[in-house]
Length: 129
Image (tube, rainbow, N blue to C red; front, side, top):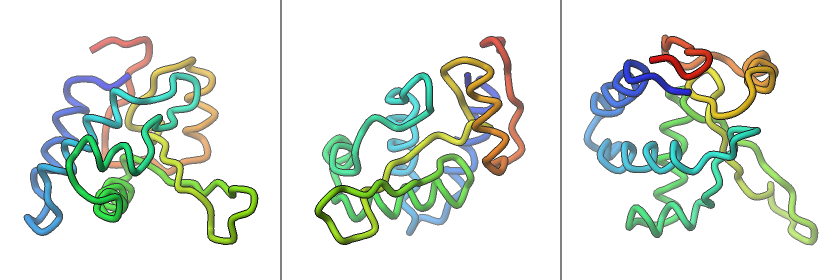
């Protein structure tokens, strides 16, 4: 869960980004991430290309935006190897469990134990706000 205060703190941090980081698009992507999370893992269900289409920019720009959110500690990125491809693999994004979670508390705790906290945000258990 993400409280109103946590949401506002992230929005404020995004708004404080330099203009060359395109804070309006970063905010748009953050909002899309929040409404497209897999409940049991926090995985972002939209691909880079799908995010680009929804935001109206290139997939390379989405990579930069996701990098900005990653530096802020809002998301994390993993690479999944695809059979037959020789590159690093497809980027798969996850919400930082210290930022938001939509699943069981035990699963969130397990994920959070492996991930560094993001900005100073308050974790709410059970959806209280």
